[in-house]
Length: 294
Image (cartoon, rainbow, N blue to C red; front, side, top):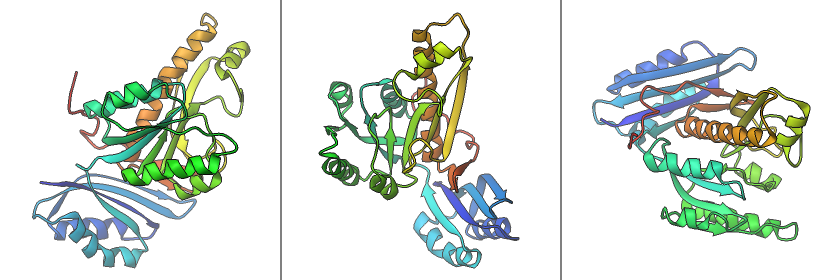
């Protein structure tokens, strides 16, 4: 039996859950996992439902037949085949810890994604990428060629059919135009010290101030630099006994983990943008299992 996921966003009102569950039951579908959130401040309702079709209904027929129900509640909705991996383009500069982590997780099936290309403004990771049979594109970016470079980047994304761009420590600021075009489809990772310790060597700055927590934040990219809706965050404790190099190493690890968790949530359609923040539903049972364990 094919497993599907239905995502719904609409103005809150009585009867939404009953309408969705009733529709799926009438179409011979069995709900296996469900999460919902009613935001009383914004008046928005969010829901994610995993289900199996026990009578052979496919996603396209369900989508067509659900349209009338959706219209009556003003829903934005989508049906997704959970066996289909999301196509992703990774962008990286000279720090490779997040890239290497994502390559490994994708290879063993721990992330439900297909990495269809890697783009960099340097050649450092070409061999690592092509050795895994993934196309590598080196696109240099300068102030003078930025529009042309971004056009080439978007051409790679479109030719590969990518649904998501991941900035795995890509050290270039994207234009407002690109951010708007890919709104809700670019995920970034950075340390969680912002707005403190901006600029070069943030971990050394943090060491000098004696911070006790190192963290990382993953968020959607918007035209407001590093201020997009947050998807995932985490921290690790440090003490006076650690060196600046320890800070960097610990920060590198937490960045990799936070970015992977953010991509996992997005690829499983668990993240909903709610104004300047997000609604992130818990993972469905079994969604963390990988094809190759150990």
